[in-house]
Image 1 (cartoon, helix red, strand yellow):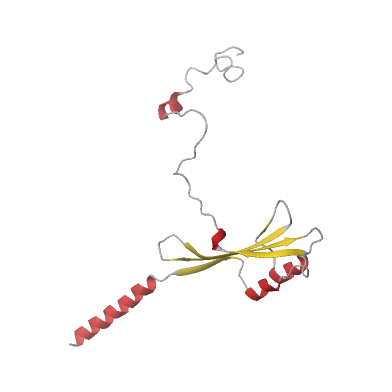
Image 2: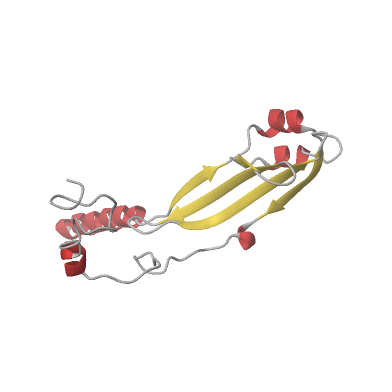
Length: 159
């Protein structure tokens, strides 16, 4: 009877530890979002300096067009040994006018994210396809021929 209770308690503890190992791992990446600070940026009132003092340096800035600062935040979750999945994603785009004043502050979320899938493990290239033997023995006989590499190789013209 006592052995059964000890075995039951051991199994209960083992099950609890196993369930804890399968819990999701949450990670925050990028800008740490503070809703109060994000809502404090107002067009017509703030400028680049006040935005930097309020939100800090942006994640990245625009390279073309109107000066725009982007604050990017993502929260991912994953189970152990599994690829992470994005659970929440937020981007704040603060656009500035030519005088440095805030023109607009727009938020976007996971609905604007584009997922790209690569096409296999090879990169397509232009030109003809060569096999392994052509790559290995393709230059035999071309060394020293005029017009194939300039001055010619060993034993060719110009030596």
